[in-house]
Image (cartoon, rainbow, N blue to C red):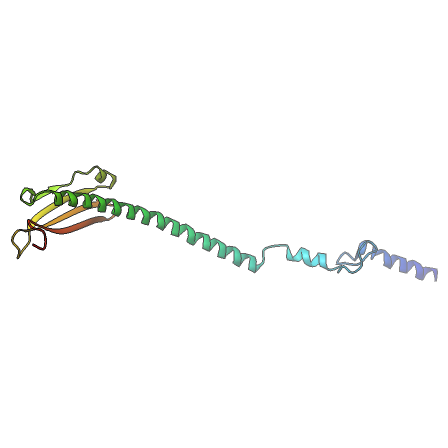
Length: 169
């Protein structure tokens, strides 16, 4: 009988420290009642790497950031193009007003525009032409063209009619 008791003590020594042969956690006197003894093992396995959901969410966030970055670059380029077009329109409009203020008999047939704002346009040039309007005597057609290059040749063209007694005499 004494030998049976010693065998039981040896078997129980394998259970000391809360583990059965070091494979599974086993509740011990130190563990709190009501807490799952396998929870720590499951948490350790879950936290070993990234889950598929975490990878999908991070890829989605990266793609959204990439779209925002690309649209910001396009917005900068569009803003530059619109600034150049607006500047060219103002130069052409200013020249058109100068031509309208000039008496009809004193208008030159053509010429170039010498506006300091043209230097703000890359390869900016401007010219105007004044010609008789076909089918009407005393009417002239004035065309003002401002051209520049921002990767492609661009231009703004303004046309108007002018007469000695106005458009509706």
